[in-house]
Amino acid sequence: MSHWFSPFPLPEIVVVQLEQAGLEPVTELPVEQEKPVLLLYNTPDQLLATTDLEGSDLLDGYRTLLAAPATSPRLTVWRLAALDAEQLVKILSGDPPPDFSAHLPPPEPEPLAALVTAAVCRSVPGLLDAYLDLELQALLGGGEPDFAYLGRLQSQITSEGLLQAWRSTGALAHQVADLREQLVQSKGLLEDTQKALAEANQKLEQQDTSLQEAREEAELTLLQLHQVQEELEHYFLKARASEHLAQAQMEQLQRAQGLLLRLHPNVLPIAPYPPAYAVQVLPPVTGATPNSTLQTEALLSTYAASLQRASALLQRARRP
Image 1: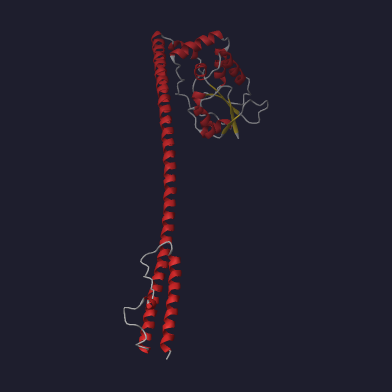
Image 2: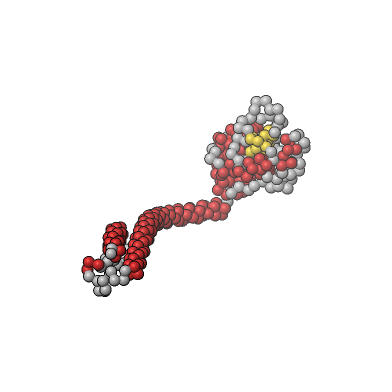
């Protein structure tokens, strides 16, 4: 497993490139290295522009890489971008470095970055020399050391470039202010949307509660209707039974009367009969009432009394 090390924060795209090549990072350089470790660094202007490091931090990092074993190859980030995974593996295996940066120019610093970096190099003694010494030890891939770094910085420090960069910074500040205002408006809109959503959810819950209550009331009403239907069917069956009983009573009385007439035609009086010989027959039930049980008992009692009177008439007819 090959490893890499850098005392400086690296861009995410560089870390991904190293992972894809199969290289693992180490947090510090081991005292005794069994295998070479790829040492990575960047130009002072790039480090000052993309990190929170001070000039002294850059100097310490460059010196750490200069003190590393010579077997560990040094490589700048901008030269690393020209290598693929296979070439990186060959470099760490000790093979001669490929000619990868012969026509690769170093990155040009921005005017403001160049102005700030030049000032930092003047205020931190040894910073520029440490970077140039590291360039002498670096894998150049057919290119030249970045000895003209200070000249490149100074070439970018022009009045026109600085004015444009300064105005660009002001424009960026205005854009930031506009974005902040849009963010505040978006927050207000988000709060209003959340409030409306909460109210809609509350109404929906109330509607769900009302719907549930209506459903329960409908189920209760349906249950009551079923109970009423069962009671009506019950009373209807009782009423029909009472009607059949009264009809049967009438038929039996008529048969009994016919039998008496055939046996003794002169026994029974001629109609209309006296009240003593009248047979009481209850009229048939025309509808179901809550007292159908009492009606049935009354029909049975009347039927029994009628049979007793018919029996008495029959005995009287048999006497000489």
